[in-house]
Image 1 (tube, helix red, strand yellow):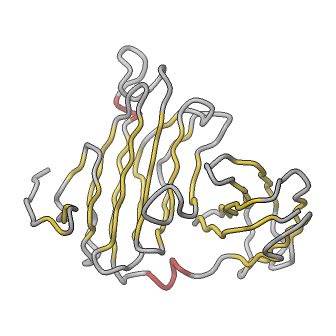
Image 2 (image 1 turned 60 degrees about the horizontal axis):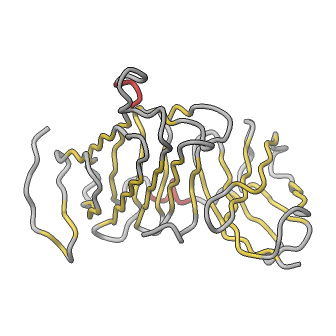
Length: 235
């Protein structure tokens, strides 16, 4: 894939749709709707981060076309709706098994997306004699007005906030598929998870007895999108 040299903007690199990235980069994504292709094969003991920023402040779209990562007991992938790891979290890979990233899609409605991954000392994409190229991650990043309204539609409301011992959630539109609710602490650990079958837009109740006072991210994962809210718990 051909790389095109474009002028730097505020210390960042403006990329065209034909630019491929294979290293740790912070980039500005143009707002013409064209996709930037990215490939990455993570190594043992990796500690890698990416930051994408929309040239015009529009939402940023990240879609994986392939890739495998180990259980988050060993290797962790975290994606945030913002410029760093302090932003609301959109994704943390599962605890129990390898995860196929193919088809996963995320939206940075803030105009920024930050992605971070870490791995332990064994079993990675680049481990000789253990895994082949099928573990390589490939994804596209784009930004622009196309589809913004559909992507930004509110998926759920939650209350009370701040919350005490219970949290209530209502879906904005009926869903017929199993839905996952995760609550993550400020360092991205999953501290509560529930899977439920929505009953239209009926109110769902979730007990919070095991959570301490503090700030959390509530992440709702449906069949076609991931959306997060900030939550404060007060005891």
